[in-house]
Image 1: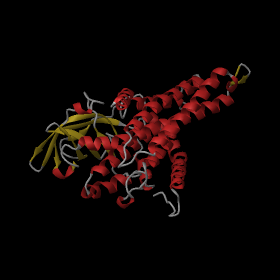
Image 2: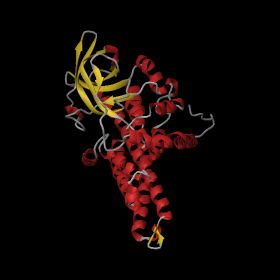
Image 3: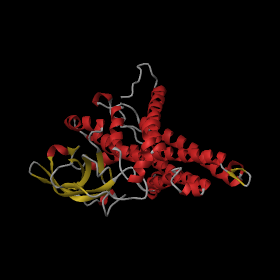
Image 4: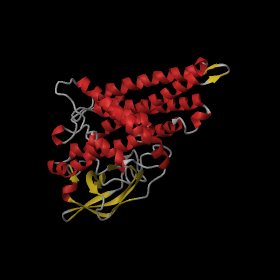
Length: 380
């Protein structure tokens, strides 16, 4: 657990968190990042190390074993991790936000006691099942069903593109019960529940994903999360911090690409002078720096307004919309500045270009954010 002196101010506490995570990233995350991107594997042992530092329950109250910190603290962790390993950061997000944070604020005391110790330690990996083969952003159109049978519920359906699906020991799953979206906790090994093979993908390869398959899967009544028909409430409560986490990942990726292009442009010479003296390169660097600074200001300003009892849907939509596109543009600029070296794997900017694309799709597409923002701004 991150040790915080009793006299530490809130700002000092956040800075201590940042330094702790940054040291972890430099010593433990960076050395393994390229290998896991190339092998397409999620480093579950590293996730357990984050559990030992108390980082898997960053937003969970201390009384229940978490760090008792804010959405800003969550942004810091995702920001620092994604600077080094966006894929691992995505697996962390799926565990710490999509499962742990989502689960905690909907769970009963008994459910918390049953699941929190192992997911906070990282000995059990968590996942969240919402997207389906025929339904993505249109969550109200989901086709996975639940029906009451005896002392529990029977689930049928498929979820797809589920981050941590291959490793997850427990999943938070949304299904329609009498046409009302309801949330369940389903453990690996439950009869009728299985995970499909790992799905190969363009980027974020250091995280894994698969289908979650439910075939007459019997879920005990005490695995109902919250109330019947309460799934939309659970979903919306978690959506804003999820989008902040994804925006923070974009914020982490962009400075890594900026730092790489600046360092390369200083060292590389063309036509008898450093690349930094060419106007075209200056444009890539200058515009990338401005985007990074704008991203940082937006994400951290919005994070300060979000919590379990405070909402900022407009702000979180805006943060993810802007940072997703900006990070991809900065990564693309880095590839261009490095030329052939950028297109190859040595400097890793090609990986960050691949990885950054995911943020324009996952957790709500950029088109969904545009629609949400327009709707909120034009309501009477």
